[in-house]
Length: 130
Image 1 (tube, rainbow, N blue to C red):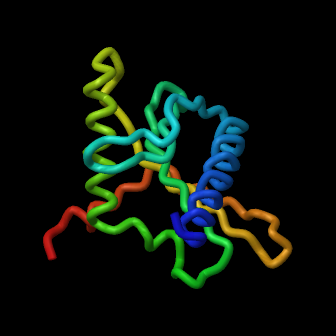
Image 2: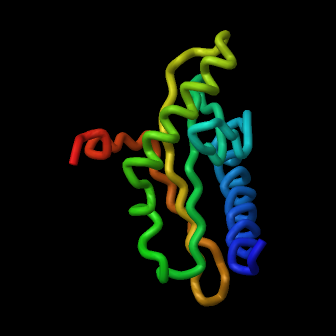
């Protein structure tokens, strides 16, 4: 594993821990962390007020790789949808109702994290053909 990929993995794990703490304080309950399927991974699967929530966590220490919100591509969005369907099918006693949240964690020069929570995002434009 390269130094860069090790750093990104460590940064991602740090961001996911912050995200769980942040969302737990808002009343979310953690069900799964890093749920893997053949389609991809969902960072966090949580429950809030009876609603299942797939949470994509994007952690950035700089804007060198662009704005975190733009990192959800059509391919990533579809993989998250497909992965959530796998989760719900494997837990068929659960309600099929779910939403997608995006949690962006950015740090300033002091290292203090700023958390931006986008709830129930619907990126229908990503489902459109090119």
